[in-house]
Length: 167
Image (cartoon, rainbow, N blue to C red; front, side):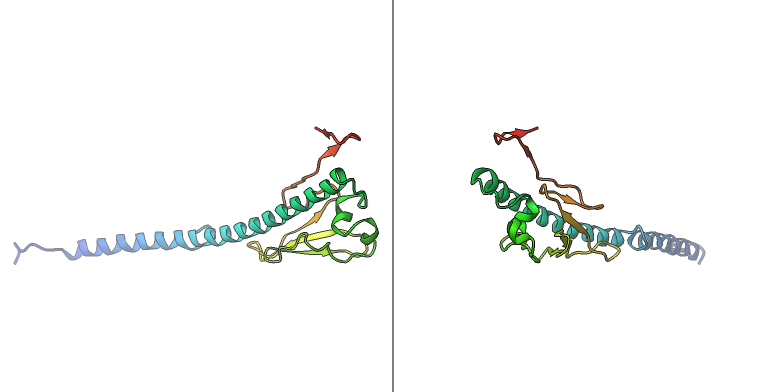
């Protein structure tokens, strides 16, 4: 029997041990705080928030374009600043509790609230980050967004009295 060929018990045990080590490393790479699954979940949350931010920024840019057109092309000076324009003009802004119809109305990505006392417009993302928190930003009078965690996406320009842009 000594001349028979085959796998020895020691070779089989070593193969099983190597496979167990490889399985352990693979499972550790998939799970855990820095694993592939955790990174994928975090990336999905970051992408969803970025999509919400982008939707709000695009809608805000559209509204700012309308404001600039009304102010400088149509010479409509019923709004002294962008926030009042969004609230329906200087007169309406005094009592406004919502943004003028047709502006910042993408309810799939964000919500808009108006503080009736300070007249601050706040945009809140519908998606949440990895800590399950939404992100908020305030709309500035110059057409930008201010927030600690949003990039300041100011769409504002400064103009001379003759409507030429100051760089």
